[in-house]
Amino acid sequence: MNITIIGLGLIGGSIAKDLRKAKFATHLTGVESNSHHAEEALQLNLVDQVLPLEQAVMKADMVILAIPVDKILQLLPLILDMIPAGTTVSDMGSTKKTIAEKVEKHPKRRNYIAAHPMSGTENSGPSAALEGLFANKITIICDQEKSGPQHLALVEKMFQVLGMNIAYMSSDEQDHSTAFISHLPHAAAFALANAVQVKEDRSIIFDLASGGFQSTVRLAKSSPEMWGPIFQQNKAYVVESLEVYIRHLKELKESIQHDEARMYELMSHANKIREVLGGENPSLIKNEETIVKFYTK
Amino acid sequence: MNITIIGLGLIGGSIAKDLRKAKFATHLTGVESNSHHAEEALQLNLVDQVLPLEQAVMKADMVILAIPVDKILQLLPLILDMIPAGTTVSDMGSTKKTIAEKVEKHPKRRNYIAAHPMSGTENSGPSAALEGLFANKITIICDQEKSGPQHLALVEKMFQVLGMNIAYMSSDEQDHSTAFISHLPHAAAFALANAVQVKEDRSIIFDLASGGFQSTVRLAKSSPEMWGPIFQQNKAYVVESLEVYIRHLKELKESIQHDEARMYELMSHANKIREVLGGENPSLIKNEETIVKFYTK
Image (cartoon, rainbow over all chains, first blue to last red; front, side):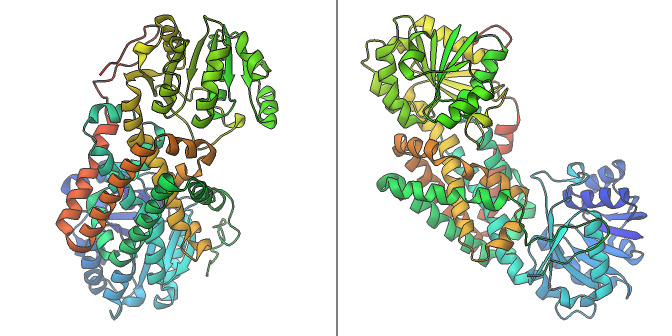
């Protein structure tokens, strides 16, 4: 199968690696606006060739957009215009509602599957691509009733090849949940990195940084080019999540100042995250060998 | 050398493992108020015996307190009362100023070294103890001029055996820096875990949690018994750091809402944490083989 990947960074490059290894892709074409990245992707053998957008799209069985969400918003309608009638298109963006609305009325809307594979690292570019990045992680497919069943099946099969479990929901639900679970932690890490950097005596403070600090601000190293457009496209829910978070920080701060018993209650409540994150969640159906299982709320 | 460790949890247990392996300790005695933990520590061979406090302290060359900081505040003066004239005492607590003030006038003040080895995990208890937990991490020694040179040398030698680099500062400086670098990230993680748990639809949101989320809230699993007393003892600086953080969160939130250019500036500034955390810092002198090097501001 001919697969075209738009954007050969961490996500696009990692998908390319796994799809080639599994022989799901027999021919991989890349589209990459950064010529240095294009070269690097060819050297790393992520794709067989790099072509201009229109050429790359015309011969593909499936087109995958793995670029920042503002770029997806621009390119997705153009790509739907270009593709032959049978081609499947999917995007890997972290926001879905604005993008889904943009192509809502497109005559080839049913060729498109709105997806959000939840995996990544704080690194970017072709050299950040990793084999197995998506294994045992979850991908969200949004508004699946708006996609043609063959296109949906092909994208589900691809995620299965990547080793992912699939959750189905509306694009509005996905943006709300993702704001709390992914966008908020990134915003919190950016702010934490800035808060710590105001301390005057910077040399010593960073010498002291231990493992706990490093894992907390790891996300603050993430690319503004990727995250800025996410915060903008999901503005309402990201702002809501930040407001909830600030409220909880203030409550903890005030309990530290004035109410020790309450402070312990808040910490014990936070500890419950261990249970929810630790164990197996029976409501999630795992990807098993060759059977695609559906997880519908 | 006979070493007595008060508290056989993550920190005390990990110290025991490394000191035994390096033969720095030839006989290890534990003091543990939790009888289940005492049994577990013996089964894991962390210590040779568990004794009541007074007995354990009387025969030790060195006594190490690895218990929550409120317990250190209670026990340290009693232990200094009990020990023979030549015994060295050190504590591993995350706060130093309140503890240092408490023993300021103690006749055996020079037997005591105020220390804070910066390493840990979110787990607790004897079974959480790890070999090599402290390797290549930094330990802070506070107010070293108030300790006797032989006692200081012995504690420095112990940290060297653990593979740690040593930074020297006043207990006030340590509490201020540690508030930003360690206590704030923990408080932030507790609040984040609580903020995320308010979302009604809890089953789906935790299914979706990807690696980024897990590493950010990892610290929220930390023990309230350890962290509550830290927040209380370092209240002024922890509250200051939370206020700085909340200000930065609000600024980021407002930029997302009203000022995209500013949002990108804030994210790029946060990215600088990559440089400071990533590279070698020439100002830090690393522990090298058998030579203790001093790092003084």
